[in-house]
Length: 463
Image 1 (cartoon, one colour):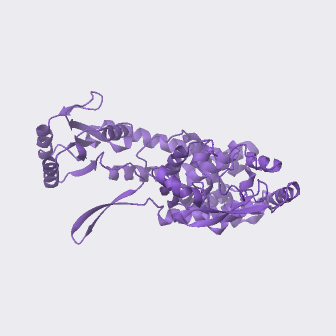
Image 2 (image 1 turned 45 degrees about the horizontal axis):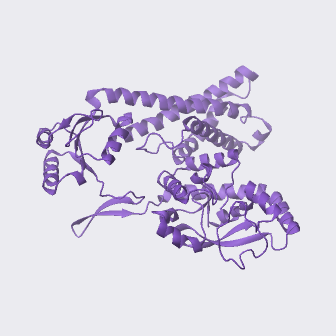
Image 3 (image 1 turned 180 degrees about the horizontal axis):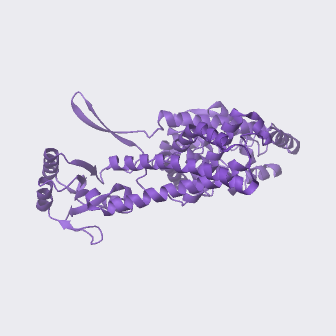
């Protein structure tokens, strides 16, 4: 709704970012000269950044810095941290470009200076913060200007409609002015109450730019009348209804044989997002497997020395689209632990765990072999944790929308895990809700945030 102005705001933010981040790079060059004396020719630095600019812009866009959000405040506050991550990624892109242009720069020679990228980390983060501040101030000024506000008329009121109106009120980029609400009772802090006749008259007089309808509160005749008048006046209409279920399914509208159909389809990531996520997974997992090869070999040896059986176990887990795959883990239990009991959920103090296995579980190092699953395409670095097929059928029956988590690849870590929802001692319902939030709000930046939190908080997540 009101997407044209929101899109304009996003474009303005994107362009402002490019200008201010470019100025931030020039500021980093100037600071280096002030702090360390004359260095490489400033013109060569500018040429370097000119070559890196498209990659920096693409990186910010792919990481979700310009994704629209109806909800202005995510469950956890992390704006400053996100902008610092943005500055860090911009720095990495410039460093990579400098190395590609001049590999000798690793020694601190010619255009590749160690100090400039490090200074750029700070100046770029500040630039991203300033650009968002400027756009926010401009949006609020426009929202306060009646000439730039869209006039909104509401028919019917429900808790869902109240939540939507509250979201618009705290989102200045919508530039929305509420004319009134046609309902039996309207809270004084929401807006003026209108009778149905008054609201229809205002709509016919062209006073409204947009109409919001709570369909469950209107009878069929009134609903038809609202659409008839709105269609004649060329006013857009949006519907919310308590009839619509709380679902991760995405509504679509199409015509088949001239018949209008409202459909609800799975919220799979777009092709470009899947490509970006897969590229990120392959690069990072390959690098980590190389860096961790020796530690993983040491862990394998210790597992073999401290208990009988193989160092690795292979468990069938349910992944994307409900397909099973073989998930790798370091063995933490005695060999053939489920021979008598069959598949059972692991507990915090499971007596079947070996002494070294308890250490691996406590540090979550038993999950490291799943980097191979990521490289092979079974899993992602970030996503909902996969469960065993023996439990999935029961969970789908008992937990609403549980199967929706299978729309994306499972991950080694996830949004639920960094919020402490790991292991058998936590609510599975809460874990699923966090998994669905991740799917609905995915961006490459969100993946990076989760990975950073995973490392800093000491998680590698248990199954």
